[in-house]
Amino acid sequence: MNHITESSIPITILSGFLGAGKTSLLNHILHGNHGLKVGVLVNDFGEINIDAELVAGASDNSVSLSNGCVCCSIRDDLVESTLQLLDGPDCPEYLILETSGVADPVAVTRTFLESELESRIEIDSILTVVDADNVDQLDGEYQDLAQNQVGIADIVILNKIDLADQARLTQVKTWIQELVPSARVIDTTHGQVPLELILGIGQFKIERLTNLSESDIHVHSTDESHDHDHHDHHDHHHHDHTLVFSTWSYSSDKPHSYKALRQAVESLPRTIYRAKGIVFLDESPDRRGVFQLVGQRTRVSVSDAWGEQTPYTHIVVIGSDDGIDADELNQRFTACQVKS
Image 1 (spheres, rainbow, N blue to C red):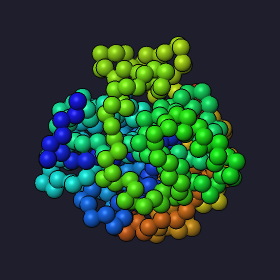
Image 2 (cartoon, rainbow, N blue to C red; image 1 turned 90 degrees about the horizontal axis):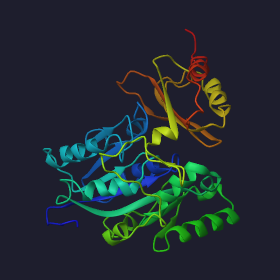
Image 3 (cartoon, helix red, strand yellow; image 1 turned 180 degrees about the horizontal axis):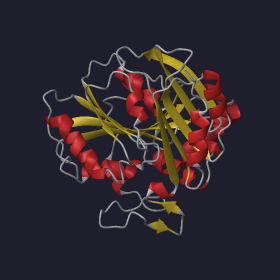
Image 4 (cartoon, rainbow, N blue to C red; image 1 turned 180 degrees about the vertical axis):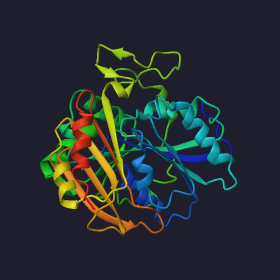
């Protein structure tokens, strides 16, 4: 049981499948008028933590967790990184953890409840962001994972409602209500949610976690003595997410053509589910380019100025286990470079 003390710091666990809009929601929180000193933990799946780079204003008080999933291979790092924030010279009043898009929030939550963080952290709520236009297109392991993330949510942020028609919205809401009838569902676009609805609301109930059964949600043991290559042949859900997803990353200090980059991203094979990056664009060399690919939706935009930072390109691609051809992707993005 979680022993809460007056010195406990509340934490919001922000979950959601790849590309649902977690980072947009986190940026909205960080720029909001909530009067809180917020500490941020950002986890991304891949060698380059693109999400941490996309979180504006969090660089001075965030801990970037890379090379794995919070609930699996870097579980110990989550504890250590949280302690770094709590024991630092400028202890935050509130914590937000943005989990990887392939993280199981049940295991993440148990990390806080079953470690030395138990007496120092109070779980305020679990927020799960859902892509209203894309979630019903998932299948297999992808669908299982999305169900896990929704099934433990206290609040479901139904994001990107502007991209879905009414029939699809009704279908997705019915799906959410069947998975977690007690959760509040908030419709939004671009993660623009009134902060008083999601911060300091005390929605988390430990009884829901302890009462979960295999019939309610696909949960695998997080006991470190278990083999992380475990495969449950009954529901075909992998505990080690690297068996379901594979990642590839690309880095360059050369400028890239906007048109060529957009064409390269839009023509990626369907085995690529998610791609995102910070890009050095030839057409706008003084400002950071940002691109996002979710399913078959692509967006390339220009963000804030590089300032004194040397321009660069970092791209992360996430696909099915056998859906990434590293050589082809390297040729694809290298071909977008502008020759000097």
